[in-house]
Length: 169
Ligand SMILES: [Zn+2]
Image 1 (cartoon, protein in one colour):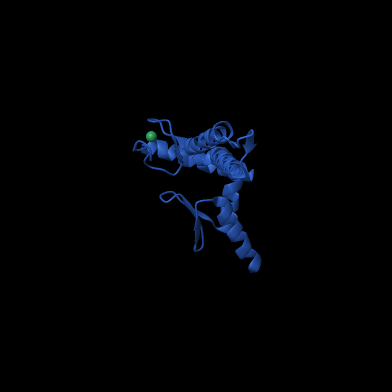
Image 2: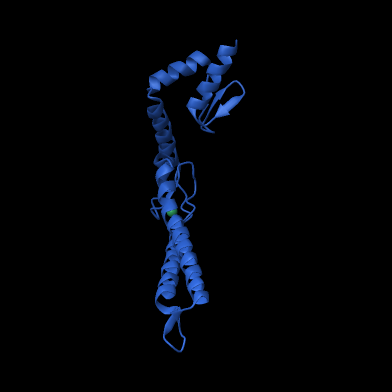
């Protein structure tokens, strides 16, 4: 997306230069050089297209920076083989097919857990207490929390659901 943006921006600049430098809007009238309205409007059209292309290219170039900023860094891990960022839940790297070891996957799971608790600003003990209080279970195989029929990867979501259910009673 970034290289396409650069390409379109460059195209816009070249077209703009071409329109300004090479399109001669003057014609010889027999008495002197006069501006030809047809050629002038043609040049104007080129300039408008060039500016539009430049802007589109610029948008394409800038957008990925904002997307990268908005995406939660904590959702990604670095592949030890190719150093690309892949989703933390990934068992296989989508870039180089590196298979994460069970040890690495377990470590990541713990990191996700820790990260979530940090975000909620509660400790492991507090979470365990809340789990006891609401009867929330954690499945180590699927890595999901469960409250009655409701299952979710995030403790926060299950706790929210549990609280909603309890308040209805
Ligand atoms: Zn990789």
